Length: 263
Image (tube, rainbow, N blue to C red; front, top):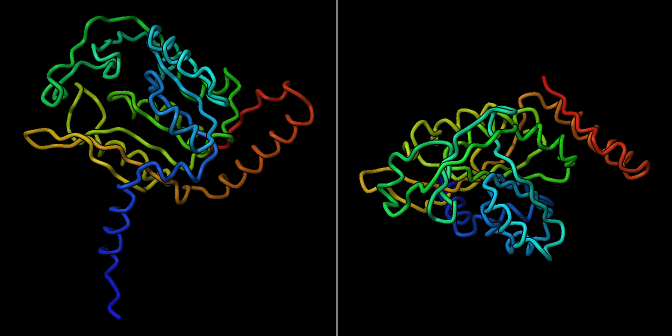
């Protein structure tokens, strides 16, 4: 029997994953979704029985999100702008497609794919890092093994602000382009350069838009296969399990103890 080459096997696996980009959700019990918009994926998460933390910065979109989550057990929402800075002021551009393409960055090549999308107004928002948000809102990071980012060009900023807690996640899913969709936005190569040294490698990829002159938009899932310092990963898990045990037995007073060990 002829054995396929490793490259052929890899292509076949990636093709199968592309047909079901959400299959990684079977391997987690919870998701933190930054860039929630109105919670369009709430039914998908419900089908997988997941806990969900939704994060959305635009006030009126957040109110729609909260209304949409009524009756969805285990899904909660917080209104924050998440970047790599705490308490920094940003001019935030609100887009005319129900806020879906809103960003702190101006459009660049985005309009070459979606010419009908434009900014209709700006608002001023203050930021937080994901690490600070989790501590402030007493979210137990151990309950959420997947991080999903759809923040219109600021995904790298979100990752940098979450560096201290990235070891809690097994999967990171990111919407990202390999061209400058927004002025000064991160691109695919930037995401890969940040995640790879932290033990995350591509698990699946789905192209959903194409730039006429060349370039693509992707949904990419990264899986943490190895951490730069595995002994700290083991200590993290041991500590998180201990905190959860103490919290279960001593009440809410210990729920704020979200400590992450770093090298």
